[in-house]
Image (tube, rainbow, N blue to C red; front, side):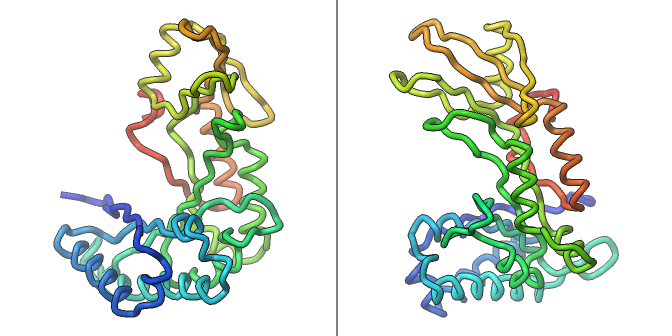
Length: 270
């Protein structure tokens, strides 16, 4: 029994995009399959990830393909909303949450999902899951999601004012990572990469480090040297303070949150 919780499984669209987006039969078949699955499994809708895949295939530099991509999301949203079910003593259409990556700068790149795309899809999508994490990586160790970066992304997407922008803000779900990173600060050895709450607590227990607060990024971190290579590591992980700051940022813009993902965090977070 779901009670008041909504269940929307994540679906990753991995079909070859040019062939998929250009052929109506394939698009219609995919939508029919998704709706059938929602009905049979009693789901409340889906969370769709496709934009990052389309960008990886390099199709979004083509304006025609870009428009086809947006049109497919519109078509999917309309189809899901047309299927009604009982929810809280009323009728409700199946929901569509769409996963979007953060634009890296005000000068949007050819594959960036920008504010104009938000507006074009706002009547067809019930929420936009904004992936505001993974700012740093093995080749450029650093914070997971600096506060200034998060603020600038929201400024790019929701920079306007007025009631219409407030309505759009309510559909944005600011991504908060419940994972962290353990970076080896030497390219001579393999990096550890992403870590979960269990890994983090194990490192705290073994290394007994001194936690440091980086006010520029709004994240806690610590350093240690591994026993095998004697290489210095930097570990960055969410804390109650860092999460509080991100919740306050979300509240100031009137946006919601999405967590990647429940179960990865430490017991303090979950």
